[in-house]
Image (cartoon, rainbow, N blue to C red; front, side, top):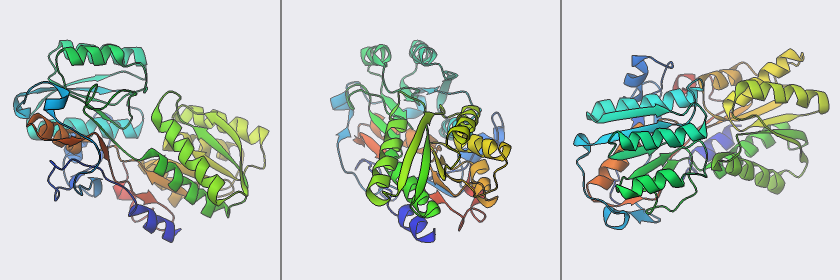
Length: 365
């Protein structure tokens, strides 16, 4: 799978404002545990992870500036930033994401207020309203769902509070309701996962999809990219099973247990995040399957999933980099100085395959 890994790593598209310095490369390390100070430290430095958070290449696409959004210039060092995390930090992606935000705030000397919605959307809305009430001048939000943000957007607009969303989009108008979205190209992630599945299976057989949680653009776009690419390049692969695993390991395991019973001849499983993929591995082990008997491709890049490649249980992992701290604060800093920022900032993600999983295990989070 070397040709695909090499080809895909150079395909990532990066959209950034012309206001960001084109030579800037923001790199951050990975979090080691849910509540360690080392995680904060690692997320702000060039560590053995070597992950590229974003690779600025000049501005393109729609931009946003204070004059259009409303409000006034702010010195980021004297501002209070509110961060709303969407999900409980049992998922390594969320652990690394929160650690990166905290580490960058500490590095810049910025006062940071944090809240965790514990996977409850109503709580996240209340959390962000509370951050505004506590005096947040700027907001970084990792949305649980894409819809239902009107109460927060009204409250933020009334005080001209800039909002940057990370890792998931909200269904609202950029440079009116929020400033920028920073995240991966999720359609492309699905396409890259499909390419890995085609190579692993030889392009023939019955395959299943473990869908992510409903109600957000990540699930929709990762599904679209995968299904469209399979249809285009491998008509011999038949998607015969689709069921949500809610981005959770336990749910991924239970869904796969049902899958094995209903479709005993299944040849491949596409899990839309690593946690569901690891749940699928547990289910296959419980059913007496051998490593590689059912091909598994996942998205995220967690250490456990990359280790799964080394151990032969997982065939490929498309990275979705959670280390948003440096780029989120750089975007806020640029915007609050009165310069333009991109409305969509697409980060660069790598891949893990049999060819590089062992050597690159230290880069996983």
